[in-house]
Image 1 (cartoon, rainbow, N blue to C red):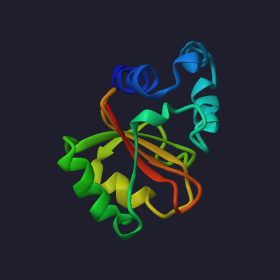
Image 2: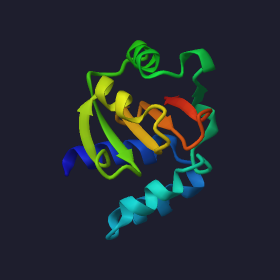
Image 3: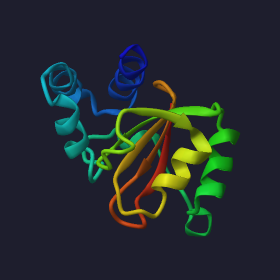
Length: 133
């Protein structure tokens, strides 16, 4: 559970809008809190927009996204939050995680470096961003 806490705390502390951080922290501690957190992140309304970097349409495939994240400091392993239950709250190799999420229609937040680098895959094919602090 420690790795989960590190990534979730980094996500909340670094990338959630300041006025919503306390609500996210208290939700995380509740039973089924992760389900509520994932549900809130479907359309990025609670993210701090100043950290968004949209991935250009020609680079919206898992291999290019992997290269972008590695060029921004991502390690080989990551932590995944997703509405896909087989991926949710799992640690995986970054390339494998991207292959399993990009273009699938599932929402995914892939924490590459806790509190510093996150990839976001939204429901829409144009909702592919990374957030960097």
